[in-house]
Amino acid sequence: MGLIENLTQSLGADNVLTSEADRLFYGHDVFRAGELPAAVVRPGSVKELQAIVRAAYESGTPLVTRGGGASYTDAFAQRRAEGITIDSSRLKRSRSTRRGRP
Image 1 (cartoon, rainbow, N blue to C red):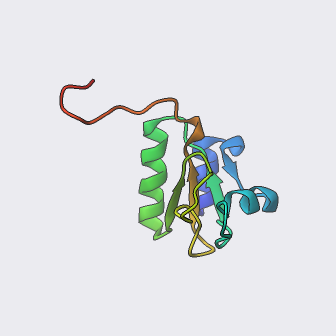
Image 2: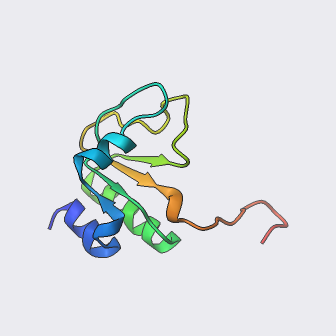
Image 3: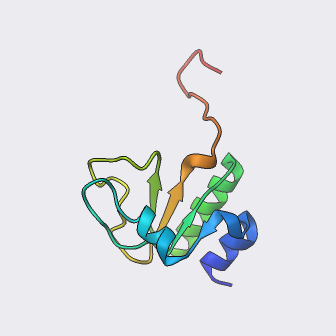
């Protein structure tokens, strides 16, 4: 089973976007279009995010993370067409790792 099929099985088809329209939308920032990602994945938990990173690492697939989608620095534009973009919009909250914070 390939990486995208594996991620689709783990996250559900609604959270692994592969249509050209979705890949075009997620493949650029405000000023620059990068390579189209092979897929856009939308984890909903830290466990799902860890599974995505692990699977990408094991297959040698590059990852790019996307937050709000308004970068002026091309920070989340793909450099290679076979990359995976992680859309973090489903992640509800993150914990601070700073001392004294929960």
